[in-house]
Image: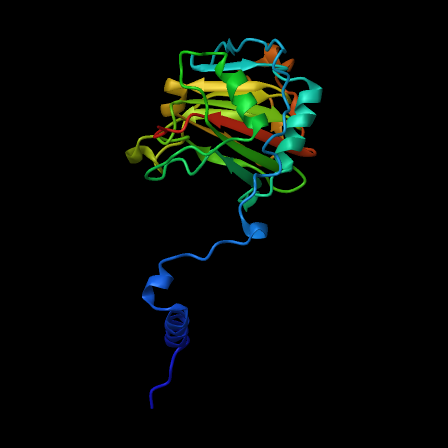
Length: 267
């Protein structure tokens, strides 16, 4: 004998509900959401963090690094660091991914029909301050917030930021230091055949801003390792970061990074 499956029963139940509401036409008209269920602004929507009147240090091209990589130490103050991290943590849309927790702000970049979504005030202000360092390029409209708990295994695998964005990335580092390694982007035929050559390392101090674009964006990968880092001779910002070859960059506490980019496809 025929046994009704759960799917059959669900379809029958939907049909009966439509009939009770007065026919198929009723199904096409969504029921209004109760006010308590309507979407509200995120809790950090209006929160400010950066001092708009503060003079930011200029980004400096690093000796020995690809010429489209630049760095500025102490780009934000200690008070601004605490404020922007606190603002970001107020958000209720964090997700857990491999090695870190993540917030994506500004919309689903890279998807068809992308339209930017409003950024919280603290994120808009950070994008505007970063864009002021090079106003000839499109201003960032998209922010990724990554939180790395260094008491656990936290890392960023080698990657490029891809064609969904204008070819310039800003990274604001907060909470803890880390070392980012830029390596050559291998051709498909070289993957698994030889190791990618290191182009440079950059010590990302707390409150610093890193910018990379063009060749460094398209022809290099970048990564952050999972283990404590020892500063090597390929570190391109020893003076700017106040470091020496052989220094060990410990992994303690939590690093929160803000990746600021301009997503393509915006109207």
